[in-house]
Amino acid sequence: MDKSQTILVVDSETDYLDWVRKQLEAPNLQVITATAADEAYKLYCRHSPDLLITETHLQPFSGLELLVKARQRDPNAMVILTSAFGTTQTVIESMKLGAFDFLRKEGLPFNLKHVVDAALTEQEQMRSAITFKPQLTVEQHQDSIVGQSLPMQQVFKMVGRVSHSDAPVMITGESGSGKELVARAIHHYSQRSSKDFIAINCAAIPEQLLESELFGHEKGAFTGAVVQRAGRFEQCNGGTLFLDEIGDMPIAIQSKILRVLQEGEFSRVGGNETLKTDVRVVAATNKNLEQEVGRKTFREDLFYRLNVVRIQLPPLRQRVEDIRLLAEYFLQKVAAKKHLPRLRLSEEAIRMMESYPWPGNVRELENTIQRATVLATSDVILPKDLPLGSNDSVPLEAEMGTTANLTKESALEFLLQTAQADPEVQLLPWLEREFTLHAMKITKGNQVRAAKLLGITRATLRKRIEIFGITKELSIS
Image 1 (cartoon, one colour):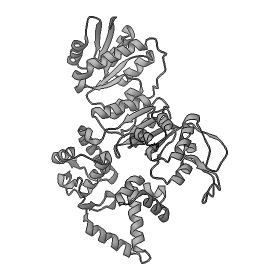
Image 2 (image 1 turned 90 degrees about the vertical axis):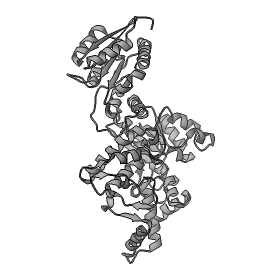
Image 3 (image 1 turned 90 degrees about the horizontal axis):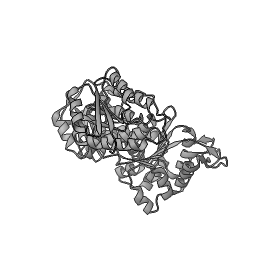
Image 4 (image 1 turned 120 degrees about the horizontal axis):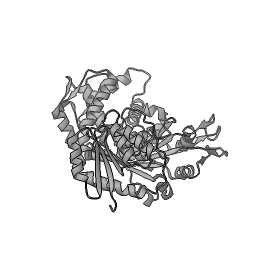
């Protein structure tokens, strides 16, 4: 830094302020401090510091409010938020409101100086930049993404940064890692939040129906099209369309998606009318799309259109410090939904979960907690209640309202008795349909995973879906 610069640091603890001053102060860098938000704002107005570093928990108003006030006064204000207890909501809101970064206090000894240097450098570059008016409304919303690990903090920051724009977003990560939750968070914190968020699983809908699902169809466009139907792009006008498993989208439909992204135009199946739509597209995949482009199974031009902003979700095994937090969150969620008594996780159960690799990621953890609430014989969940990675038994899900733990033999006996209770049921077709329907439900309509679960090819699964009349609504209900 060639010229003298000023940093204003705000925190209620004077010892912390002294520590920060010693870390940052230099001959060309002055550090001024405040212990209250109102005092800090007066100093900010008086000194116009190059950088504001503020704790989120302040009196008489919060660090987020101080951030808003600073950026109202100067749209290019450079602000870093700090907290010992940063929630998902706080991280996302701070980035949405224009914070340069959000730092957890336990990591400050390692990254404070580096982040401050980067912020001051960017501030110098922004002095001549065009100013903009930030989104100032802060909506209170219950956290839907849970995590305090460094990888997830980076995800929250990205959500905050991209929420104010309409740029397409590509979310990548393993199955079950929470890609749809991230997509919903982007929509919730965007200016489109008052409009619809619609999610489509591109792998769950047969190819011949996916085009109609996306773009709609005219009456008589094909057999069964008895009325005109609006597609998702039409229904979602002004909102956000989430295309899950986009790597499984047929190549013929990809070109039509590209036209919507480029021109904002499309036509219904069987129609000649050109329709306009204003939709933000967020896509997700667990595939390596660069490889799919190389294999010519995914259009290169569509890939670059969708990959404007990329958010990579870490697998659960790479964020072990989040497992306890997630498990307790899911436990509270299930207990509230099922009106169960207060349940607790034993330390042994938590250690067991933290040492497990979670191939099914967060979704597997949530299902495990649901099963544990059924299997537990006391108000404390123990390791014996967590059949991690076990195929020796088939635990009934909480919705079945029983604490039984069926073996494969007893589960088969139960199914046979259920089928035989109705004399009109043809046993093998009934079982085949029930297994197909259940596989589609527990994979949330993902045909690739459902086929793998059933031990059949995807083509065979599609035939079963058609024969048994399994609709999208049935498979995700």
